[in-house]
Image 1 (cartoon, one colour):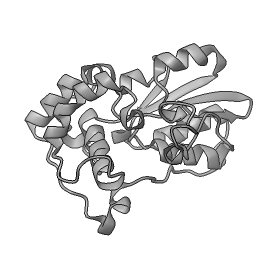
Image 2: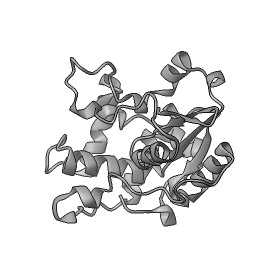
Image 3: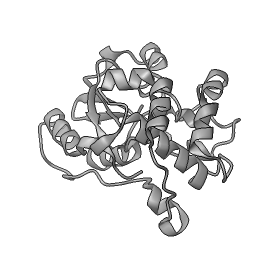
Length: 221
């Protein structure tokens, strides 16, 4: 949930994991200066050092509303992604990069574990499993990653009242650059898999207007 000051305006960015959030944070920092409530080093902190259950930039929306109500901000925004593409990216990142999952764990088998995991620990994997609808404020301006990030830059131009600064949001945490040799395993999003994800995250499909199958919304993990 990084907060950035743009001129005299306070802007809240609801960082949904695996939706280009790190790239957007870097862009905001480069263009507008330091971010508040942003802890990129959270993963390196011990449980004793960490003051939250997940990185503050992944704050659940009910908690955010209690601590920082909408009225504090001049604007709020978020970026979302097709739930199946996002969850596949979460899985591959956790298995191939973070090594938080067994190396032989299959995607379908992992999906079967999610209801119990979320019931026992909604902050599991630093909040990466939480539905997007539980992170994105109702009043936020929502962008879809599949549409590209150019509209985000244009929207920020409108907030800033200027077109100064970088014209593109770069990439960060791209899976192919984090896996040794760039060899990203191919995981097919079959109808059975996509239907299962739609059952697990129905609110994300309804609220953000996604169909069950990604279709031509598909982009690289």
